[in-house]
Amino acid sequence: MAQTKVFAPEGYHFMVQRDGGFYLQKNSSSGYEAHTLTNGDKSSEYVMMTYRTQHPAPKGIPTRRQTQGAQTTSRRTTRTTPTRTATTTRTTSTTRSTRTTGGSSSGGGYSGGY
Image (cartoon, rainbow, N blue to C red; front, side):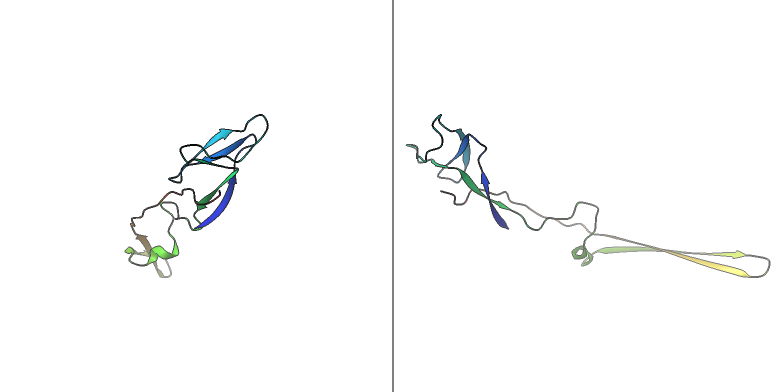
């Protein structure tokens, strides 16, 4: 996980709540001024957002990690074809691996910034 600063759109600022939530508020006509509301919400021109640096592969696309514990099914067929001068044997192998995994994800929240 990593963090980045997310700035409010031009003409707005963030109001950061005690529980870490935040919302946008329009700047006054004189521009942004830092302030705290009576309920404890503090103003900030930016918030710190956490984002993932490692993402799971889309479903159906195997990754290197998915090879451990994978179920493999193999099918092998042999076909013999006689010709005038020789007999040709052709062998085809098909291997298919599948693995199901469970996972969970968690969202980000506010941390710092005021």
